[in-house]
Image (cartoon, rainbow, N blue to C red):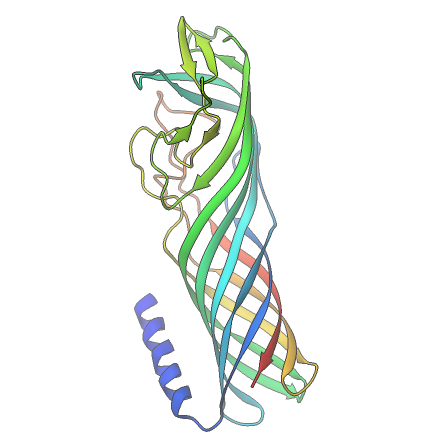
Length: 288
């Protein structure tokens, strides 16, 4: 489907390039986005705000309708929180795993940046109003998150409280480049006494800190969806626009998307969720 859409896009661009009624412009604005999917108990996803900018191209078939395409840099994402029973994996200096249970209070601000290619058909019921709809394909170029975690009421495998009984540290994720167990530590590192071992914990943890093996990147490289909206022209060239962008693809990889609430015999539980990008986009543009 992606190849077919790309072929159609190239066909449209080649047609636009030779058309007398071809026009181009630019636009910029805000994305009010979220990721919609199944949630665990204690988990929530909330709206995030990003920006968008790029170039627009249009071919006027008649005075009432035509085809429009864009090449946009667009930030999407979500604010993810988890508050509830969970686990935390500590590592000894020899990289042995010490698994603990407790209460996780985690907040993440997730930002995924895409290069988007929307193609729409527009209709003008009025000289200053344009209604449009179509499809969009996106390529993920950056994926990051920042936040913090507090893990409290920590107990070891024998249900014995640790000392200290709570930790907290920052989260700084790069989902495209972080490695398993990647983190930075204070000098000297802060530690927790667990069954006679002094296990260090990070000052800042990476996206896959709690993974020992590579389970792949969390967010997939491509997304596609449908779009629809309306533009209002303030003059012949200046306009404001609002539209809905609804993703049609699950954007997370199952193996890297794991449960935060529990483990299965000390193994991660993969979540086979259908996570989709949903965004409302507002923009201001100018066409030549």
